[in-house]
Image (tube, rainbow, N blue to C red):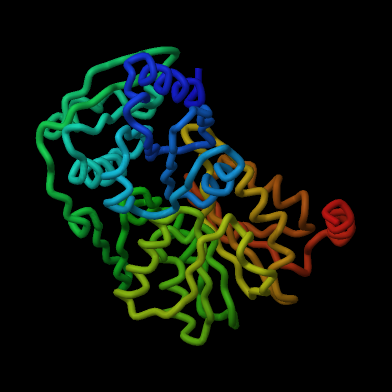
Length: 357
């Protein structure tokens, strides 16, 4: 059983209860992860996502409209007779998104909340009890589906959800859904500790920029450096914008699936604290793609620095494409790896270019 099948169960339930004969607009939001939307007659389905990768994948499905934004426009929520929310494992993100949605819902709208049990869906009744009454519809193969009825419309205050951190003379702002929402993680601090002011970088690319702290540190210590920040998740992009603003830093911020929107610009430095999870599962594809494609975006003297958990196969992945790998620093939990473009395996490059033509 997976989210695709649960979505079908949910749509089937609404049909059986004759909601579909009256209502024509369905909005699906939350933890959208390649969900398969059944084709239904006379139904307009809108999907809202905060992840550019999901946006690209969902365009392959037969849906009327896909929305990529931090929050959904009021008129879209108001025009949706049925709203389906897929639970995310971040409690802060759930409260942020549902507080906003509940503030705009009316009593005639149907809301369904579903998700994997290991994502924390079973605590939904408890953490949402001041706003909504939830009734369980299904509990199948580690998944749960609820139907809800709003009884108290909450106020939504956007800035109440923004976290403020200060570290090393840097102001950091984070929005729910961004990596390290509650604190600056130790992996990021370790990577920052490898920047020692002796390098002569002119351009840098921050992949998976998150809160933007890495780029702000570079800007403060290398005043002439030109920065490009990218992330596929809009909460990270918005967090980085806030962090840059509060530190008076100018930089280019892009929504991009790794290098997809870079247009082959060359950088002296590529940095990343890459995501290692896709949903609730470990996935090293992003890490591998960052490493494999980096050579196409590095200047002649360019280098890439990555911090990851110590037990990840980062060294093995680097070894596939580079002769020499340096471990700049490590702790009991993290390692910072460095490779330079000059150490790229040329024979692999020829093979890579041939297979991608």
